[in-house]
Length: 446
Figure 1: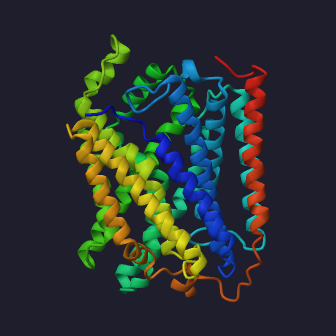
Figure 2: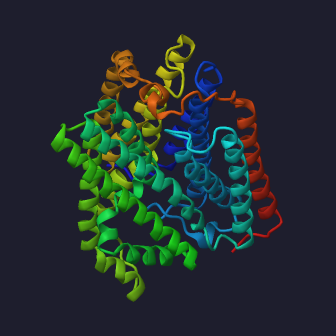
Figure 3: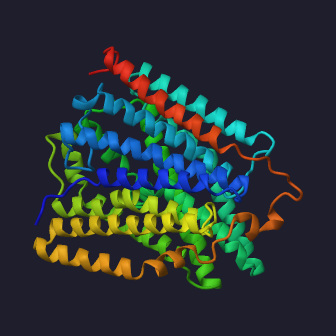
């Protein structure tokens, strides 16, 4: 039996590899539409921002250690460091892009004459605003940017309900891909909070937030509390809507893989809510007397569900969207080999991490776990072509799936791929320079 390790370094590798590979493939996908290339660039840079944020988190964990509950960091130790400052600002940049994504994919909702300029301008302005705001307030309102999710959330929920209703009513099965991608984006953005839906309904998440503020040394403001509570509420609403929609569709038409995924997350949230209620006495002990540790089984459950979903499965969902909706050119031979490498790499990393988690609580000898990993590697190598083909089978862009929902005669302007990447590269450099400057001058710090 081995000690449970943090999944943050693994998530950093997965997100960075997938993000950089996405931009590389898009650079050679000259025939894809401007809408697909914009969506691909946004997904790629979201993954890069998240990956860099996880790199900074991994540095903090290595330097200062990670606390046992919810893999949290002691802010009394890390506050004011370069890694903490950069991590927080990179996460803010990722949230700004995630908030904009529903307005550009699956459909470009904003006028195509100026939506790219709106995207670049809003991303730059939002990043500069939150960078300045957090630095001047010493990160006391760190979750304020969560409120940016509300407009995009409403768009995705409305889109999901619109297309699943039309599909069932008119038996128009081509619309299934639209409702699925809207649901996948909701899971990709709000997946972690979906696993807390029953706790949010029972209004017990506040107890956990209070405990975490004590354990981590956080001094929350109203904006911080409001941002956390709002994000939890959005995740709860999303999984309940998805579950009702998929249950109705399953009754009318039949079960689907996305329906199975939705029901699994719903069940995980239900079990997690019961588990959270069972440990409420331990949670309250932290601010009534002295903090008691959670049972080992509770920590293991968190590692396998909420943490694994946000660190391991969310990048895989984004990879599926990139391939299955023809955002990147999957037909060209020069892209096909790179896609095959990415898919196998993602599957191997996730498989090895899951085996390591299993080994953390089951007394499995290292030799057996190594043999199991070798078997998994052999299966992936032997079935590599079939796995990749199944992922991209039937891949079609949104424009081809529902051409009648796209504005007729719309002449898309050529998308300036280099300018887009240069802009977000400058945002990344700006975040690192400001973080180095403020921490070097001693402006930040506890």
